[in-house]
Amino acid sequence: MTEMVYGSVPVRDGEPILSKWWRTVDRWTISCVLILFGIGLLLGFAASPPLAARNGFDAFHYVERQAIFGVAALLAMLAVSMMTPHTVRRLAVLGFLAAFVALVFLPVFGTDFGKGAVRWYSLGFASVQPSEFLKPAVVVVAAWLVAASQEINGPPGRTWSFALTVAIVLMLALQPDFGQAALVLFGWGVIYFVAGAPLFILAGIAGIVVLAGSVAYSGSEHFARRIDGFLAPEVDPNTQLGFATNAIREGGFFGVGVGEGQVKWSLPDAHTDFIIAVAAEEYGLVLVFVLIALYTTVVVRAFSRLMRERDPFIRLAGTGLAAMFGVQAMINMGVAVRLLPAKGMTLPFVSYGGSSIIATGIAMGMLLAFTRTRPQGEIGELLRGRLR
Image 1 (cartoon, one colour):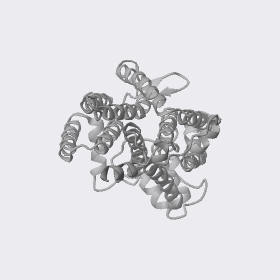
Image 2 (image 1 turned 90 degrees about the horizontal axis):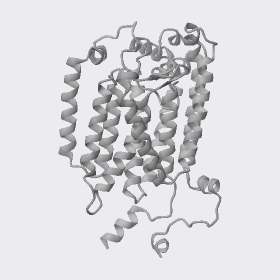
Image 3 (image 1 turned 180 degrees about the horizontal axis):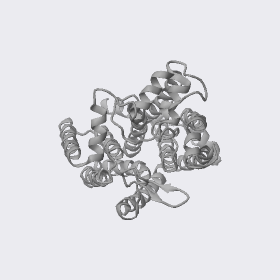
Image 4 (image 1 turned 180 degrees about the vertical axis):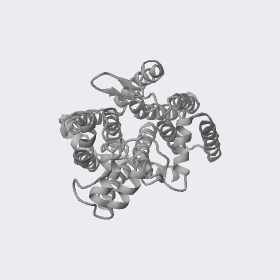
């Protein structure tokens, strides 16, 4: 009777798991992710050889590692996307607990690799950045708590989620990693807003963030240096922002040609945080527009499918993951063109980095699981039924 009323997609009894997954998953999003990963490898061939030469490795050492990390990320994405929302929630809770514990012990056992911020665990053959894995997990956990608070006699999930988010933001800020802290806070803010938070509360939180930023500027040399560099009237041509800005300018619309770019020889993070500068210099704004279109497609497709979702938890968690994915890409590209201060944030699926690409693959798998077509009525139909 419920299916007759809400016009749901019929369930095929005995249908194989892969067949059901392929029928219900958003194939446009999977295609965009695969293209992004392919572009990341293409740019890796251009950006990583100079770094490999400086470190005494083979020319394509980092490309090979990125391919390995990328395959692991894609496999993780596909595996998670086949899970049910409840299974994804359990995975997120376990992942959150593990990443939270790792974040707690990071000041004791972590390392900064000479970058001034203790963000990684060194394993010798590789490194792990706990905050990358914490981001998708905390979004799902926060969405679960907020959704539970909307139930009759439900727990004070909004308060709990806010307290949890504040604790994580403070720990990230102490590393210091203000970029990831801002991203986690943004993800929670999106969930809180979609759940129906009063605007004056969000405005108050924004004021607290501004105040915290002022305190951080006064007490953190690392933070102050990046803000001062961003606010300076002229860009120092010998800084990372200076090199990136000049590379984008030189690339023009069609680029200087494959392999002809020079910024990769000057930027120490050309293969990670400033990979978009390499793309703009060698391939021009054409490739940059393609990247923007791919990220936009993923986010818009997710939002359009989530608008039909009736489960509050799935709707909130999916919205938070999609918004965080899109904003991270926007921040990375915004830093390169000096619209935002330097954040040390990767470009999803394109930048080099094991923790980043694998964690992003898990997050995208969660988003694909939440946006799969399920037997249910559209929320618009439910609202129209209430108005009659």
